[in-house]
Image (cartoon, rainbow, N blue to C red):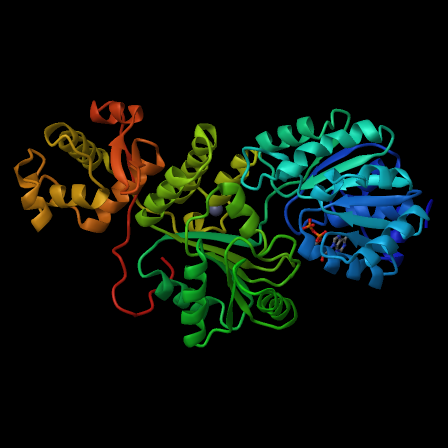
Length: 524
Ligand code: ADP
Ligand code: ZN
């Protein structure tokens, strides 16, 4: 259909009456041969931005996508619509591969999907040069960002496309849009002359809720039962083991839940994915291995039972809810144990200093979101560079503003305890021990270490353990305390000084008492 009108292709091939948002401008830009950088949230409609130009321009549109598993779905969907599409990847046998290559050379393909690593394989550039490239689409372009959460080294070489094909338009697309990632995409993919299309990242139909973690499986079950019974959702957990345990617990409680993680056999994963896509009300409990590129419009909730590693990751994962525009929820439970655990993971990771520093920054930003006392959406939009948004009226903070209290004195007590123990005992301790010291709780360990002789012993009896935990979380989130090493020992940072000197106040959200027993508790 080379030379076809994009509006007609939209209607006749894809069955849609109108372009959405920036789609039309992007499509026209690329058809005219210009480069584009597209930042659009998940579900915004990025695929059409390169599929339609691929159809309308002479030659084959080459789509670089890291998601080999999903290429087949995309190819199948395009073929159903009558588009001549194919994929080349390592899971194909040589015969199939030869057929695809031949079809490409003969100009019989509108769209060809390739994994980025394929492009760096010997002979691929030459092979592509034997046919005609209509455009290059670089999907999930944030994978080029070394400081992002999804870095893939193969993406770094995609900048070379500009040298081999100076006259072929390139379009980079992503749903991750911090100003920093945006800049990296532009620089590393050498898109200096690109036009930039930055859609609003607001997802007004998603209600963000973040609550303190108690008995998290109980909380999750309450949440699903009382607010999303029989509805499709995704539950994210950090480890495979937690995925399996949580899926089993939900299934036992009568929720149609299936586990999904990279360690499960391929057929089982495929079955979970297919059931989730085709049936109603399936809940997938998964690691972050699940979801990229999955297009299910009626996902009513995304729940995180462990703290995501970054705000980008959180936003991308929660963005899988409510693509159909109907009310949906993003629910997250987090606690002090998450902070300690993630800190351990970072300390144990094999990245260099800079990588760790970066992971730590991601963790702190995530904590700042959780501990914040401002509208969640305003925080998220500002994080992605959209300033000036008004409180949304549709997040937990807006709907029931957290009561705040002046925690300056408890913060000072806690910080001095940490400093004192370090000084007087020449040792550092994890949060639990400090809280015991503050509350004057005697234990074998306390007596053994003679912690009850410390001058800060028992000065914090006025707060309950869960309140002290909240103070610790808050100080970690605001970077006044650091949790270090395998045992999560606490250490104050430079930022703690103004508080210790009484120069600044610490305002934090009031914490509800932890739930006990199995009774369901309403929205709080
Ligand atoms: P993204 O890649 O940005 O996450 P997709 O390209 O998968 O989003 O599109 C999300 C959904 O929106 C798909 O179901 C797609 O068919 C639909 N869609 C895209 N553009 C339009 C449009 N102009 N009109 C109606 N539906 C659209
Ligand atoms: Zn809000």
